[in-house]
Image (cartoon, rainbow, N blue to C red; front, top):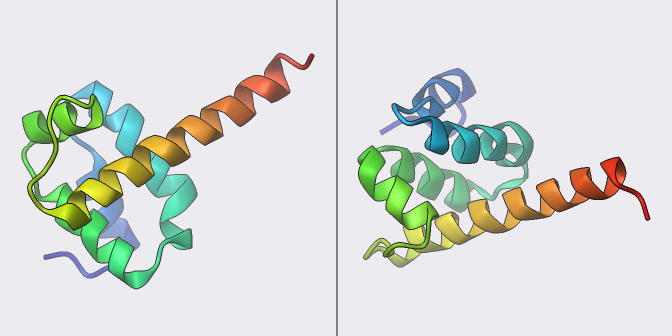
Length: 95
């Protein structure tokens, strides 16, 4: 398993074989990783060891991991990415 402090290796592990996963996982790592607790970082690193098809399905809400901690990281990725995109859209399209 990757060391949670070795960000260069984790960054490399975030690069997936599917562009859709890169779009979800890489921004989360770049913008949110440093804000996570050590336990959340461990769960995120564990998530990176999962097969791409499983990650894709979980991130698209087509099933969920059996491990509750992995499910919570999936939800956190979805929530934080959505919040960041909403903030970017609000800045780009002000009322």
